[in-house]
Length: 325
View 1 (spheres, rainbow, N blue to C red):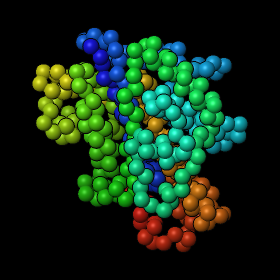
View 2 (cartoon, rainbow, N blue to C red):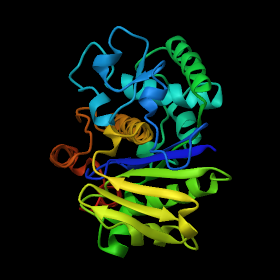
View 3 (tube, rainbow, N blue to C red):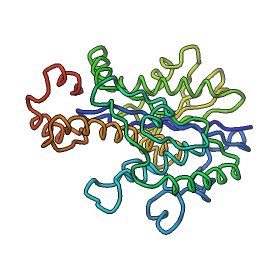
View 4 (cartoon, helix red, strand yellow):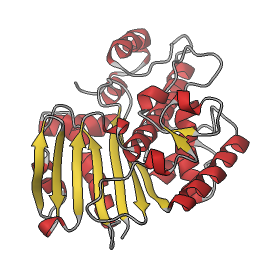
């Protein structure tokens, strides 16, 4: 029996500017036995990946971890801030598809991350930005060999892009910005369920804010599939899918990206898409207002950016690009 092992995580929940991105990665693991815990893919794939930048130092291993730990400071001058995020996401994408995207447009298309139809997201850029194509090809070859030897296949790697206008519409309709994330999570869940075939499903999702009771959400997003409680406590909400749980289980937990490689990879994909989106955003606005400093979109710096851009943007543009709190 094979295990379909999936992880979901988001990037950009709190900022005032830029998209919300929710990532999904799905692995098929051969030789798994019903009743066993989800495998430690860091261990299973130890010939090609590792958990931390420290472990990767001096080796060819690819670090797969919480995106916040892999995104370098913009103040680092010796390496591009996205080098580790890009390396991991492009290596896994290349191992699955057999080649590498030449631009961020190509990557977005492969991940199903459709940019919002705004002028500030319209200018593509070449990839890679932090390493070389030759180095990435070596990573892809090594990773493909590691995956094949371990009997593990990456069957899906995707990102849902929720643009500012869609985000604000959801907030107005529901009264909460959490629904923007919940809707993207639900869409990912439906994608995963469609992949099940004869496999058993295990989905791990990072905790949705402070929410500890997620059963009703799962049932709402998977209409027609019975959802039953397995356990709920401050550290874990776990639910069975299908009659008697025959389809599998989904779990929500804090810091899931520290415990499950599929969640870490989903986190990296979501963060990379958001960072590339903000790079487009900043190129566009810096071309219109040359003295304008770039922004990552988070609240304090977003307020600085909005103050500096001043009347160089129209009231309609301001309405479309500022996300509701």
